[in-house]
Image (cartoon, rainbow, N blue to C red; front, side, top):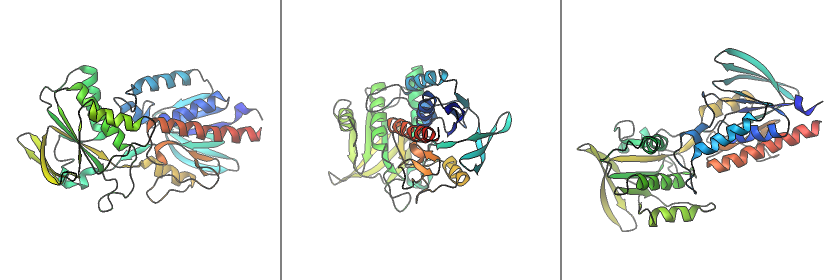
Length: 344
């Protein structure tokens, strides 16, 4: 059998799915890349900048799309979802639903890269998410940062922005006990961007502790604190109260042992990373395991293998930064290429 007759189905066109499609396509195998949104890029497309090197995520997406364009063996299907999957020996008959109707494809391996969603912070009534318009989650604030950066149309009255970390993470009572891993870094990035855009503004990051375990990560956070003058306050805020169009934050600085009040124009919540609804659906369709909190779980064969001929990459397995998602996409692709090579 020619290697070009074998096809991998990749579900999700974010950084993990894009990388997997490119690597399998470069190995000469056919790929069907399915993305539910009208465009590729996933969450990466929504970001204003990246850590730890302040790079433009759109440039990475554009480069990956250029690579895809050079691979005729990769078929991209946007505005498309997976409706059904039936195992047939060493392959799957998969039903795809798009704007033009449904069609079926035979595939020899599957990589699930369905990304993540953010925990609904409205359960923290004391923070006013969903009630006060100036209380935003991290992705909503990324959209604001992109608008301010691109158009230069910045609010003149933005004086103070406050960031709350671990909203739904490391909280057994209202959220989840696990650490969402990437929040410390993107909160530092967002605070640094605010200081770049509004040099006279004040930024406060309320934290339990910060975790910067990655190459250049600690240096990145220290530069935000020391060079951009973002103030880190150790303590979980207790209450957000609307006050004359702004937001009064009551908290305790646990290092100083004193209560503090900060009045902010915007409060940004670092919500917990949770599995996307698509992740649950794909787990059911392909009969694969999920862990306690709904992330895809690996079997004993490989850290990125969820079942026979079914692999996964990116945040559907657990919270991961964009670069880590790319690494996992490449690793899952290597598993599929090795599988296809064995069959030749």
